[in-house]
Picture (cartoon, rainbow, N blue to C red):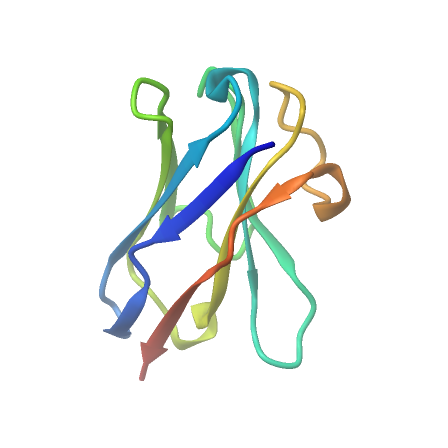
Length: 125
């Protein structure tokens, strides 16, 4: 069993920055790819970014590319999502997730087995 706990969400003005963290426990962290997804009210959950078990491979949704940076610290069993130049359309609940593979996969939420409880990010205009 894997437990994921997100933190770092909050209210920020457009153009501002936030850093989300996701702490993992329960299994060998460095063996598992991790991802961030987000879900806005009335919308489906969408892929944001993924990182391989080693941290050497990353993919981003086009909507966040160049603004968000995904990183991991395997010594701390934690991943981070640095979000810069935030826009009101980034407002959503952000979830971290992990899959039972070190490879990133396609970014489909069905590939991810364990999920955190989510953290709210609100960007005001």
